[in-house]
Length: 135
Length: 267
Ligand code: SF4
Ligand code: SF4
Ligand code: SF4
Image 1 (cartoon, protein in one colour):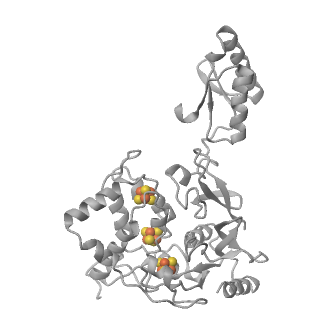
Image 2: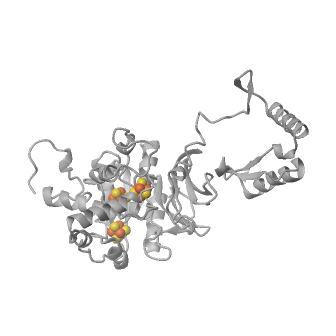
């Protein structure tokens, strides 16, 4: 019997509420707000309260999807990344770097967001970087 | 007190009378619900007090219900205060836990916490550590009722308007366990709309808590909008007491008058 409450940070927005993910024998069973966290003091919004729900969801995407002939089909990571890279290069060449915009995410770490803006500025040559909340 | 509790947990685990004990752990600066099993280190056991008494309590009975659903044949120990023991009695009555498979480890609350909770009975019947402090008179409801109807109406309307519909009051509540919740029934509460329907959302919950709420105050503490939910439920509990002589969780095998058919039971 393996019962745990793992302390983690909510992935839904940038506030950084602390919560415990409850698991029994490796399966998530619930979320509890952390009372001793100075950020959220034992409270959460409705998204935070359901932070455990999407992880094991059957509806979660497990592979990249690419639209082919109007339909989304599962493809390998290599194919998806090659396609994205070639289209980005094309658009940049035909127009200019500002034809591409980058949206950062609250669901990833600071360091990953840093890398993304670096890629936008140094790699693509654009300052068009914004936050996902403005999508 | 904590040493007595550690000793008790140790005894229960080593003599094999329980599979595990649901209590709290203080680790990396935070307090969390935890399951202690044989051989586990009890050094970081915590009773839910950090800066002040009882400020880091969690719904341990809820953890117990989750574990029992997964492992229905096992016996578990659980750390209980007065309100938690009332909760156990309620959960036995509502067939959510089997009293044969629960070993409560009862601790009393200090006077400061009893005052803050305005708690009638800040100790469990089955108490193994701590000293009983005095039960507190319920003045909060009477104070709130000293205002006129229209003042009260606008007060509560203002409170309910603050609700962000996080469902935290339900999710934290150790007495809420329904698989289908009325607060998610679209005939009562429309999906995705804010503010919530006033007063339907809060009064539906208050009605459902009338014979269940054990006045632990966890909902109050979880409400990001600081709505005085506990006061509201103290009122519904008071009505149950005046009308039927019933208080949730006070007597071990007492049925709720709301689950009986026929004439009202004798007070
Ligand atoms: S409600 Fe009573 S028993 Fe529960 S924590 Fe408060 S004082 Fe203790
Ligand atoms: S005080 Fe709140 S959390 Fe505790 S039993 Fe009553 S409704 Fe549930
Ligand atoms: S916890 Fe407070 S804000 Fe959240 S749904 Fe309940 S009353 Fe509304």
